Image 1 (cartoon, rainbow, N blue to C red):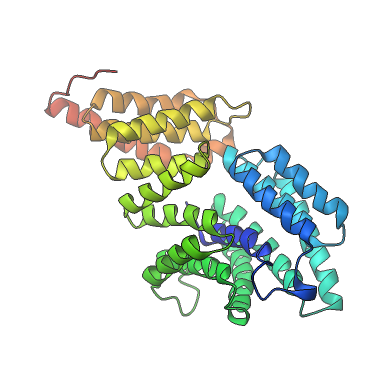
Image 2: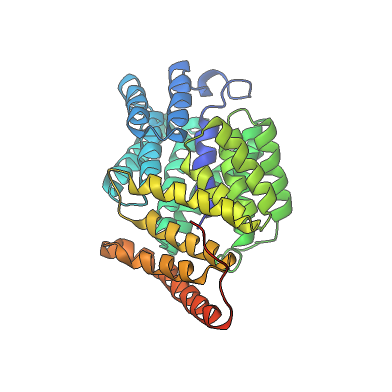
Length: 356
């Protein structure tokens, strides 16, 4: 599930590098070496070249060991790697670097309470932690960290409305806060701001200096959640022109095609993703299981009930760790319901001839 914390991560990445062309100048502007290395780091993450991205972050740490930026970007790369492989394998390293971000930022704030970057990085580390916690449905800690992080973004946006990229982060948070109102029942003043938030995301995608890709990623998830599949598909296809191998946009494209009931194209997309994830050197089978679930849905849509049942059964062929199996509990439940529906439908009506 895409949660408010994920929006925090993307906007943190983007805001960190918006020194050019904004009001962030003088003592508050990042050194050009950090600026350039951060741009390259983000680009490499979208290209899924995580080792090279780590090297760029380490260059910042080596050159500026007392600045929180390098540690922040290293944590970002580690987090992105774990998301790509759907694993917690580097959790200790991730938290270590988040804590280093906070330590370096607080040291700067002890000397200069108004330093924009130090405030931002300290809040950013909390945003990272909140996002990570949400991936494993640890909601109490997820929203505690997430709210601390986004509060800083909101405050900075009030102080610097001329930094348009910040509007992307606020818009992302406003959407998911509204969409998850029932989850956030304990937070005061929660109102439905989805439409205005989506408009802000479109503005960030069009006019943001560095938020274009992150805004696009967020919009795909938001539009899928809103069942505006045609719009999500258009953005996913556009982004795949820039990053042809990006699995995050392949997932978005495949789900949007399914939503549009373009089942044959959706099947092709999910099989491509399945081939990719199963060919990785590190594979805990989480993504593969999800691919089979989506392929089962596709075959159900095509009234290929036997194939639907087969895809549901294939989810059980993998050997999962206990952690991965627990994360997939609801997906296995959905597959079981789908399998029952397919068996019942198969008894009632003949299937169209399947041509592989």
